[in-house]
Image (cartoon, one colour):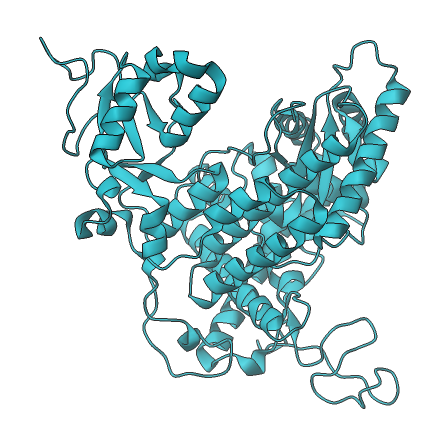
Length: 563
């Protein structure tokens, strides 16, 4: 974080997604049945459908102005066309001999413009420059970093991208790299979406932690609705993570504002785990860390440490006010082990690699996923890069990491039957041992743990291979694709792993949404007796894919030689 910057989430480039195929209708069977999902979700249509249906005026042909156009003239053009934005044509692009300074509105198929000018940009320019803003060229007020969406991508992907970048319109690109139009927030809302874009704006304006509490509840409702409408799990996970990114960014800025002095050094907030991989759904707690720059000048190190200790405590208090549960394992910035300067992080990693062990392997694994939120100095990126370089040169640490991926076996019996948790008897659970009772440790009898037996071994094994291969993707699906491209995974295994991960995440998301609707605390368990017969068979196949993948890891890293 750069001190004084406005709150905004990480601006990582969007992940590419292929076409999605939905299964046909099935006989309804239980609350988690695939048949409970709607046959058609408007947000699962491609962007081109909105363009071809007409959409709003802004979603058809965009308004263009030429570079050098005075801001007053551009604003008048926007008002005359009834448009809230215009695209700025690059200097000398497509104007031709004797072309007018302000190009007329043009049809789709134009080259990528130099930037976009919105009503909000005009207002900001007036607030900053006063009456003199009228004669400024549009380049002085426009946004040059365009955020785009391809016309063959899903509307949901467009919505997710707006949320990530906290914007209200996207430039739609054709396959040949030309502009098709502008996709507005209103187009997505007309397609049946909730309004997470407005939710992000409300988060940025939240006055305190208590003001963030209803916004967190709204974010959960958005995720639940997406799950219930049949949006694929990887898309839901991304949207959920991006909403939580904005919430963390706002709480961090509130914490800084509550301090008597500004930070003595730049720092970055890092999210870890499923939040970092953008596979976040409705988990109870979130893992996070803080990376502090060594550039604190003449301020004594002990004063820097004291400042960030108090800042982390203030952030924790704000999170509690907002309803964000604390991590029971202490993976929070308030823990000195997860709050250090970049040189301290480097020394910490080096110490782990000098004496590799299982706890060190888990810690390294979490840092491999680290993703910066509101990290204007790329401190988290630098931490992850140095970690990757150091771990790749330590084969023993990779073996410890791989061993964690095979520690939990999928819940399959000797003949391939699903193995569920059993009810206890007598007074142990206070429920008489009936089906669905809770064990003393909170596990549900008659259920199985999707994370322990499926999601974690698959995700963690892929994460280890990714680090070993020097791949850079952050999410599990992207990592699988990169490992296939690098020849680490065969096309068949990569496809199996991808399908298994999607199905496991989908089941978990629907189970969590159902639990939240029922007033229960979401967890990673699902009851097989609430699944259709087809879903149970697919679940068995997923666990078999995981078991086969674990065998591959055992062979690749010679895990039988480790004690």
